[in-house]
Length: 332
Image (tube, rainbow, N blue to C red; front, side, top):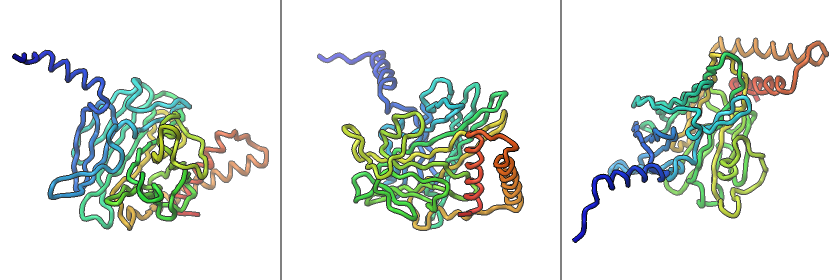
């Protein structure tokens, strides 16, 4: 005669399954149009799915989802890097707003708000993507240098055809880096059934300083930037073969106390028209950009004349600001 396990044994089983199984995550679901967004409450990770078959309510993942931890957000604060969701310095909570959910990560020195809003590209009848807005708020009483990166573990282009990515201007067959001066507007990872499209620069949002297409393990294993190797394939023998990923980098920049830096990235099912965003610069913004450019040029003139000193870090910040102004005003 078989004995029935006690309720205590069942409770212990489920407790240890949740602790030791990396997929035993507390998941929150948000649906809008053709998109299902899953937020894992205890890690701050997210997954994105597209409604492939409305009749059967079948959703397909738009990037790797078996272990949501392979895609992540990291911040660089005064040259120290924190992988968010894994570092105990940051607490995690989720704002469960169905229209605009957000994940809040808080530490004594930095507050991070990762907000999701649903978007519709020109060729889609319903919402088919999300806008991810990340805001870094300096909670210190002093200025810090803060930046961020977002790694997306793509997989649709793996093993499909001869290339894992394309952009609106090029086919990506090997490791590739894209900067603010690039003409590329969006990238696509696709298989034979559907595809994921990601923004490179859209509208008034600050574009990434560096967008890196490379082997996932190479991008994952180092805390910040990986050395770019032009022409390298997407293999990292012996364990990681043909494993593609894309990483957005926003370089550390001065962030005064109480101030907030904001970055946005768009992800959607592929649309031949792209995201359809047209850059609109208000007269006030254009005037502010002109004033800032004149100030920067004035400082550079004084520096070249030997009247003031500018260190390498300040020069790098000036170059980054000029590149952002050019990108925002579509100056090439």
